Image: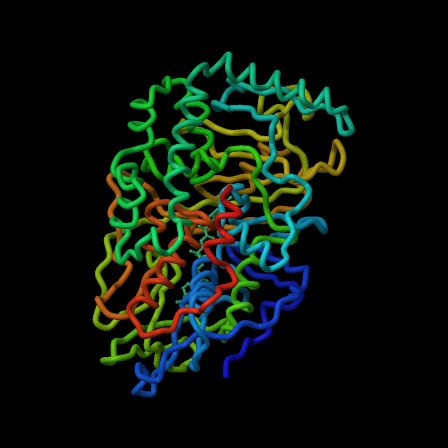
Length: 512
Ligand SMILES: Cc1cc2nc3c(=O)[nH]c(=O)nc-3n(C[C@H](O)[C@H](O)[C@H](O)COP(=O)(O)OP(=O)(O)OC[C@H]3O[C@@H](n4cnc5c(N)ncnc54)[C@H](O)[C@@H]3O)c2cc1C
């Protein structure tokens, strides 16, 4: 029998200490209108030993998508799908934070309209989009450490007419055009070209191979070349002028990946796509995607059970957990970046060295200090402050998350290092509440990138997050997971499900 432990899927409020003051709160129970799905599992022919489980390490979007796609694509068979999560909550880098009763995304925040897996997950799970437009910060100021070198117009007052809002958008476009010229269009076509190729990953099974390494997966879609050169090199070749690269593009890569334009071209293109319009997020928190997928997959969820070691025992793996338990697993899927976790592999596995870029997300309820920005009033400060790549700027971006009134706002600050109290005291004139989170956020991108294997040992030990060296996002996690699920199925005698919940026909409808 398969079972789902209820913790993490019910309404709860959690407090966790990272750096002393990280709090995560869950506020909404998940409800499902769908019947539980059959669980996958291995045919009796492949579990001659005591091992008959498929085990997934990590309950983020990659692990939960792997669980989902495995069950979605296979005929029901008997055995267990186990998902291990060292924390007391599911979702990994998808988590919310609560400030003065409001919930905000603390990690992965925005979803691109063409992130088709995530869109379809939300649809399937009955998760609605939040309606407060987080991510629609259209009053942008670009800060060079001394002044705003460029600013769009402050937004029209709430309740303004459609005409006034259209006029405002038009004027902003003209301002951008005046400063950056044709480079704006070139930047857009660069991102669109990448998106067009990325959409190939939603092709049906007949026209899309299963990949056993990331290089082939990227070469097949035509995206590999972008991982071998920096974003800056790519954009210069695409005809962007240096001002656009050092200002607008840099602002975007610093916001989305906390890094400069020396990131790889593919991570850069994903980052640029992440600044387009139409971005959205799940009402109540994106972490519900992971929770919903795990529930739909009917996985056995082991919360607060970290995996310490994975040992090859012949035709199965022995997973030892920090609770002292052992699990025999025919297939093991690692769905977390291995760069900062301490799992011992026997025999050892070989992956190229990769550093994670830490992003410090600091949530402040209070008010920015206009003097810090050389301004006389807080109402003159743009609602999204992006920064250039200059050594003395202590943060990557500051955005207004909520304006309660002129004196009471909630901000999200991204920085590469922790912002200590004395620095925050300069940037903010008042501070009622501060929440700090230090995320090992995404790989530190460079070019040329090299990739860890998807199959770590030539057998049945899989690594979903090798694809994260191409680009890190909810959707790239889901795309990598779908490929890993198909790869597992292709290498084991699993029966394919006749009519998956999410099929290629449904996909076509969404792609159009
Ligand atoms: C600040 C920030 C902003 C971002 N913004 C966006 C955005 O706007 N849009 C977007 O699409 N993406 C964004 N991302 C990226 C996105 O959040 C990630 O790419 C994605 O969530 C990664 O999911 P994952 O499942 O691969 O990894 P994770 O979410 O990291 O999941 C791995 C899980 O494995 C668990 N784990 C680790 N080791 C063990 C072990 N030994 N045993 C058991 N469990 C273990 C971890 O606790 C974790 O829960 C952002 C990320 C950050 C940090």
